[in-house]
Length: 94
Image 1 (spheres, rainbow, N blue to C red):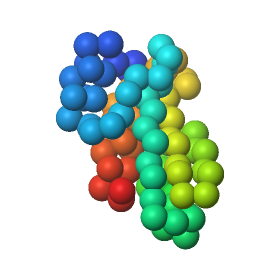
Image 2 (image 1 turned 135 degrees about the vertical axis):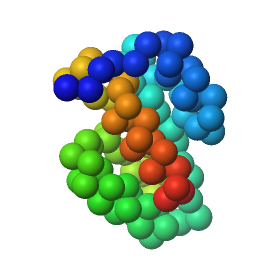
Image 3 (image 1 turned 180 degrees about the vertical axis):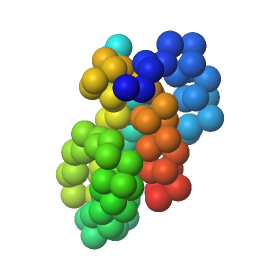
Image 4 (image 1 turned 90 degrees about the horizontal axis):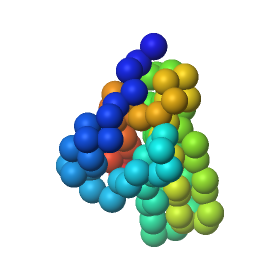
C-alpha cells in the first residue's frame, strides 16, 4: 500500500502543481474550466483512461464545461504518490 504523504510533502508538491489545493485532511482538489461541454468531456475521458491504467480513480464532478477533480488514496487515508502522479498526468491533459 502507498504511504501517506506529510503535510509538508504535499505543500512542496502543490507549489509546483498550479491550481491544486489541499481538500480537507485527506485529499487534493482542482477545478478545470473548458470552452464547452464537449471539450470538458474529452478531458474527462483522457483522465479516465489514465486512471484506469494506474488503477487509481479520482472523484469527478462535471457540470457543463466545469470539471472538478478530487484525489485521495482511501486505503492510505490521505494523499500519496499515486495521487501526485495522477495529478501530474491530469495537468498534461488540461
